[in-house]
Length: 130
Image (cartoon, rainbow, N blue to C red; front, side, top):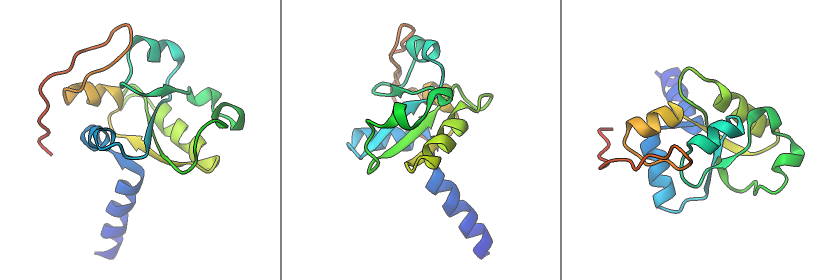
C-alpha cells in the first residue's frame, strides 16, 4: 500500500491537469506556464500568459531571467508529443521546480479554456468534472 501512495503522491508532485493549472493561475499562485514547443506552434496558439521557450533552446542563457522560486509548468501539443517532458527535464536539470501539464494544449482546449495566438479560441463555459 505504501508504494502505491508514494507513486500517486509523486505523480501529483510532477504533473497537473488543465483545471489545476487554471485554478493556480486564477488564484495568482507562483506558477509560470512554459510552452516548450517551437515558436511557430506558440505563435499559432498558446495558453494565455504562457512564455515560449522551446525545449531544444532551453539553456542557462535562455532561462537566466527566470525566478527559481516559482513553479514552472511545461506543456506541448498533447499526449502525442513529448516536448513538455523534454522541457520539464531540461528545467529540472537547471534547478527549477517544474511540473508537466497532462494532455498539453489539446486537453486545455478540450476542457474549454481559452487560448491566445493567431489561431486563438474563446473557450466555453468551464465546469470541470474532476
